[in-house]
Length: 254
Ligand code: UDP
Image 1 (cartoon, rainbow, N blue to C red):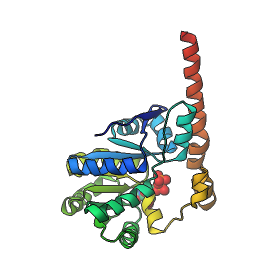
Image 2: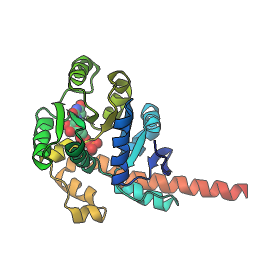
Image 3: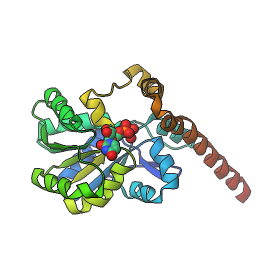
Image 4: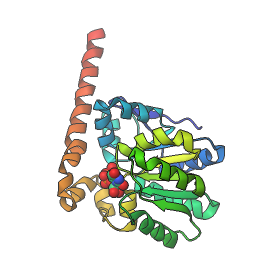
């Protein structure tokens, strides 16, 4: 494992990796075998880890924690740390499909609503000819579904498992199931399959560049307002508060 510098935001580690570095690291994990957990951290992850210690520990134990969500880059800068890039889950999936087309690594798409993983696989096969999709299955993060999912995964033998059960369910599922599955890499990818399949439209590039993807989501999916509020308001407020407390403590010890 290459060592990266990382930022710590409200106790959650985020690795300072670019998209190229993340893809290279995942390729190295596949070569090494074993089992590795990659998390795509965003501000909502950080906030839910504040009150969910199991999730916090899962994030802390991850082998690679990529920065997904521009709020993390702003927060790192504000607290004097460095997170140079963004590694959005959806783009990571696309890059891994491209890697699969050239190297033959086997991808498995698990999660999302029935039919979505298959639709996402069809899009990836069209965009990245030669990609190996070892299988697709919606399933669910419920423990009763585990035997069937295990059976399907053992038969498909993927190198990289993309799990789309939303947060925190997907990463808790990986932490609990990956040790018995012997899959080199598992990644929680949130809504990535919805976007890749075209079921949900992504914000245009220019809005993403200026950090306003959340506004597009708010307009398109107003029922997500609570989660957007957490990412856009509660997270920065918590980071600013923590930074202020740290500064006051430092003054006190001088
Ligand atoms: N999902 C699922 N089973 C569940 C809960 C969620 O397959 O029990 C899927 C859902 O269909 C969606 C993904 O998990 O494809 C998470 O989407 P969301 O937009 O909430 O993800 P995030 O905002 O965390 O990226």
